[in-house]
Image (cartoon, rainbow over the protein chains, first blue to last red):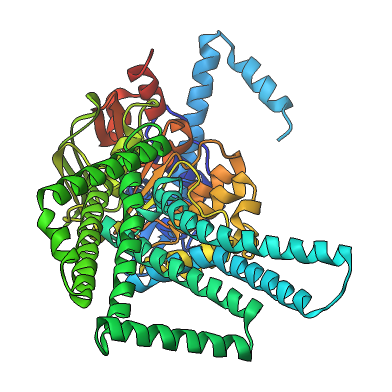
Length: 119
Length: 262
Length: 232
């Protein structure tokens, strides 16, 4: 099944988010070779040019590296991945807290609810 | 690649014709077999009569069917839904037109041959061929006496060439009519009307020419027998050839420039 | 020649009814283009002109730098929006027919796709269901290594699974040397596959841009933008 995209932001940005998520989560393991642009495009159900653009952008962050003639690899820099992981939880939490503050939830309420959740 | 075009055209025509030829031969064979049995029986007579009747219908129907097949095949593969594929092939319109005209003529000729084979199946035998041989020998001799020695072969060749030219001109006349008719909403109606249009136009032109140049007919009628045949066949051939070229150009023009698949 | 298609001043009218109005269009190689517009907007007319099935009234068209004719037909692979297969041929017969006339036909690709979809090669076309016939038609067209593919409504009227297969086939056959033009009115289904869009309305070219540009400029998906432009 193709990846899902919404109509809000450019597709290549959404692809970035999805791939970075997979790297953070470990679906794409550090040091592993990434599938070719074409294969990824088919898997995602997107135009190969769009996939190419997305991958180039991720390369810019350092999470992906290109080895001459050998394709793309996920970085071995675990620290970098850690930074992105950290940034992801910070951004998501900030968004969540923003919503909570808008409805006047207190910090204690929020912590209490979270501690009761089974993860 | 042109070879492939002809190959597929032949496949398309003969996948229908060969079974029909087979049926004709089978019926002819049945007539022959039944005629060899000598039984005095009303039922037998009915069966015999029925078989002969069927064979006769088959023989006539086959001639008709062959011609209709060529026309319908042209329509279906160029102007029907399949036309989208046919015209997407890397050929110009004229390749298709010539291919279908030539293959159509070949189909007509093989049908005539098949009819003859059917006759042979029914009547063939030593006596038959002997009679046939004597018959042709006599006809040949009489013809040679009348036209001049050795001229008969030439005349026969000319007859065949003229027949082919007339055959092609008839086939292409239908093609031209269909090419004109396909521009209109109702393609079939358009084709029928175009056909009659062309037919009457040709008749008119012929009448005009014949009346304006009476010398042509006089020239033929006042010549010695052999010279007369030469002039006659030349005339027929020229008229047919001009029509062949004319219909081809018309069909090519309309299918190249005014193509209107739905 | 990096442009697969160049149209200048293209006009086509049927008995005075203007189907295409002064179309100027240029398409590069290696693109997947959506040709979008309501029914009767002129999409099919444009495609038929590109395939050589229709002659324009005026205008210059070059496909890979060549005039429309047998040369362009051998590099253009066209999928009509209705059935065009000979009912009496077998699937195998149609494959051989294509291989006979198109030097760019890739037999192994056709074999793979027919196997993937479990299509009986010995079956006569007329015995196949409508959906299967459409799949066979698509396989034949996509098995050619053409420079320009023209797909007229390839996903309309097929079930979602087939639609996915068709889009996946289009993507996996993608070649940076060839261009695919998909004419459709089902935009949301194909949007993410496209790199460019061309929108036509009543014979006029309304939009010709990349999908990324359009999304950035309008802040909307192509589907949403289309609905806006063509609101009744």
